[in-house]
Amino acid sequence: MRHLKVNISVIVFVCFLAPLFAQTEIAGIGPFKIGVTSTQIIHQLESELETNCIKVYSGTQFYNVRRSSKVFIAELIPDTLNEYSSPTYASFCPNTRVFYVSQYSVSGVEIKEAYLKFFDDQLYELLCERTSELIEALTIKYGEPKIEQRDSYTDCGYFSSANTIKLKTYSITQEWRNNNVIANGCIYNRYNSECEESLGSYFSIYNLDTTTAERLCNDARREQMDAKKKEIKRTKLSDF
Image (cartoon, rainbow, N blue to C red; front, top):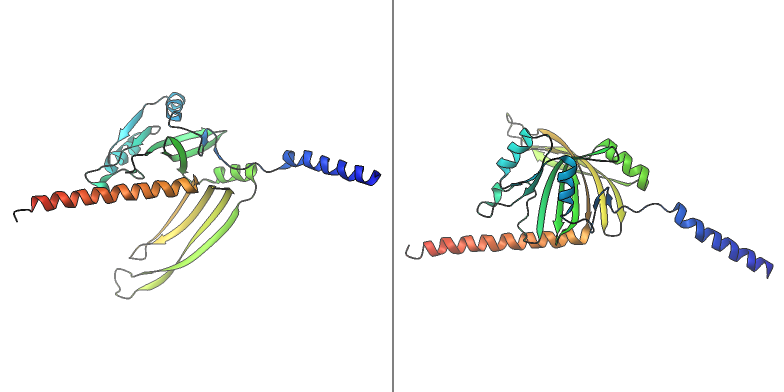
């Protein structure tokens, strides 16, 4: 009986300590909580950054604003007449709103070139620059990430040669996961058709299910737009 009491005491003690030493599960960065934060956060950002959110309707306008302004917030509106002129990451889904924040500091860590994506007024993805400071902060708070490297080969040909060659490309991903909430820091390289290499990186944290739903909504909306454009052209050609 004495041994039973001791064992029960040990179990209770371990259960008490477990939450104290459990690793925090990632759910967002600072005020940007996946599935929780609403578009009302934009008003807070306007106040903190002392700027007003503007609306951007084209990729050209977005490019020019980014060149001329150091700190700004913009809502990215898709161009329904010419979808390829839309700002980067603007969505055609009527349930989606996308905002761009040039820079924002969370506990001394700079979040740069941030895209805040909302579906049904809930933040479902934060996409921004991958910096060493950001990755270090995430590692300190959430532990070492799962690291995966993927290698592949791409065909390209030098301008002065008709022969194509295969060059190795890679991507290295650092991942933290909390059920459907996934955070990825990625670095990669690419080659264009003339064998010119480019290097890139990004960080994103998103809800997997909502990202899938938003993509399906966006694709469906674009198909509807394409069908409508074809119908208009067909009508104009009725007497052709």
